[in-house]
Image (cartoon, rainbow, N blue to C red; front, top):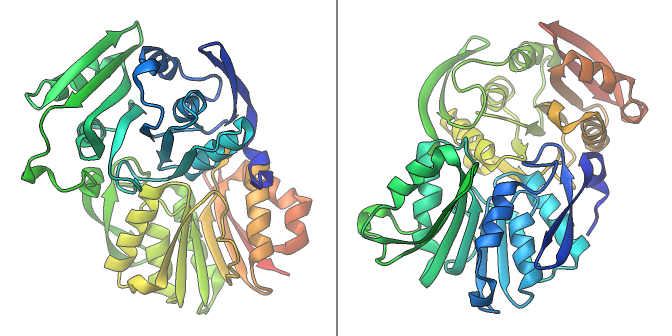
Length: 402
């Protein structure tokens, strides 16, 4: 695989030893537990009865991060079929990178919002390090919707932080669930459980329910436009706009009278920038690009609610800011400062390179990273800086492709 695009994100390698095998994983600073393999994940793996997992078992790693759970199982069970999913495209990319480095060929990694996009119906084993900040409704779905994806004798094995132990125990205290193992440490609790009865009709057909993220509808005034947006838990700007977004909305007037052929919105969050862009400029096509599948889906829904035809919207779950092969004439978005300066500059430079000549790029972020971007030689090769706006430690900058 081509790993060059991940180099700016690479923080270090972390080692993990199990069953006498030493595995190394490349990690990014923005992914969970980038300093070492999480002790909860390590504890989960140590509770697994590897000798009782069938050689040809089908395994799902739900919320794979950079791959320590799923890839360890794929390594130890080379004839098993392992699916690893995450809502973060960077996590998927690093899992694929680590699979390549480990020589693992019996595993696949791809994006999924919970179970929503899992490509197989039935697994013998589902494993997950449940995120502690996911929220009650999401945690409930991650724990109980395993029933829709397990074989008759299949088992789910999860680890949670100690504050969630009682909540999970309450969820699993049900006649339809058999808890096979509950093991608690100072910081984590591991549960092995299976379902002794199938789902009821009221529980849905496949356990893929995006409504668990719904926060409700709010009307946002966007540059004089009263826009109804459906907001989601787990995404920024559910009730107030960030200073960066406000700067970009004001900077839309710096674009003048344009009618973009192809506009790209990266890191769209709830969709404010995308909806306002559609209302103001009516581009022929809008590509939404983000690492986060939840953001992509809510931004798309809000665009459609705002009058944009569904057929004009493209979704791209990826780390790069512009889809491969695209030649947009307008790119707008918020830089992810936590990715580090190398990644920010590399992705902005690549986006600028893909702009058509004369096209515009409008980005915002903290004033320090924006200043660093302006000093980057790589970006200066493709982009000419125009008007800059500042507010409370943040900046927006308008570029034109030369």
